[in-house]
Length: 489
Image 1 (cartoon, one colour):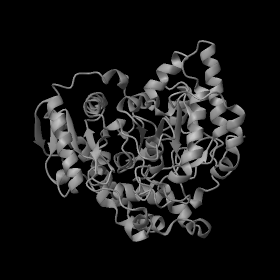
Image 2 (cartoon, one colour):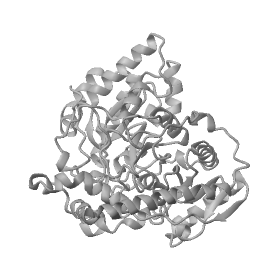
Image 3 (cartoon, one colour):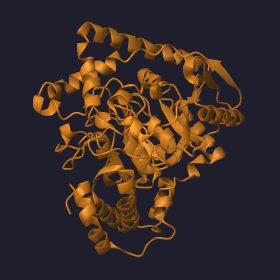
Image 4 (cartoon, one colour):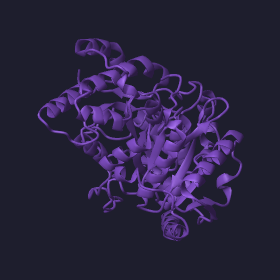
């Protein structure tokens, strides 16, 4: 089976492939392990990368038809990679904590020889010739690629219900959206269809689905991980980062993908220590800021209840909190203009213009009226806001807010163009941190009365990932929400 195993071919042929490669099953199911737990067993030779990969492929075959997280499943490639990595272990070579770990990528991240569709009919037959830099780094770190994950079309929305490949469903309740645009990434991690995944985030697209699916989602400092080889929305705001089941796993993945890329115009040179080393750092002296203004306003009751409880736990862990004022976030003119610039050739071509979902086409086309002067002014406003943010972190070390003010909607309500165009309320608490370019992580903090997950967001100064990881880890261990599994799992 080739590396270009699509979902249609996978459903027809993977059962035979797995049967031919089948070995005695691990007990307990190894897909219940975190990345760090599985890594320790792989390194000690107590767990085989091939067996772990096979276990995930079997779960994909069983549960993906319900969740619809995958667009392309690379079963043959995954087993080939796992076998090669297992042979390396036999020769005494260990690449690091991702050696033999099965991961998946949002399908706007280029993979050479494997379709990268951005969940759009426009790119349905697109096959890149070169890997995205982050995938190249993951391969060097020893990760195994299970496949490519569904998303909101062109990552231009927050529901993952508008996609050429059918809506992604929330593993906690299949009638609800998983959030977006990295909905397939979050849903796959929550449903144990991969050990970890990469998503992208321009206004909310890692943290929103992380909150809605009860997983961890990290958007690091802008430029810390390369976005070269990723279908863009706005390079001034685009980020790539991990979605995982634990904070420690997010640190492992971030350590692998971070680093300067001279071919990426927004990549930055930064010598960040291994974030895994920060997980056990003391948080007792951290100064925690609670932003005044809209951040805690108009929360849905279940979110307000969970947020209050989470803030109480953080106060016990880190000491006193204080109110702070964040500078006004600039508008979205930069995003809109840069998105339109990328899509203009496809919108100008009748053969491709008609392939967009109407909601996506309408939202992108509406940005075509920006002048060069307006774009330059917006870039200047954004840069001034980024320079104003460090003053806040002279008063506090980290900022805590709810990730999202509202709970997810039903899929049927999210598929219509009007609803898709009016979904910006979901990004109210996340978008400013993209505009500021600073790191932020969403961690599970509870559930609604209907059993849907809720997230708390922790943010820090530029290149302030280490204390962010330390507090997120301390909170995770103090509460244990990450140990809950959705019914689909």
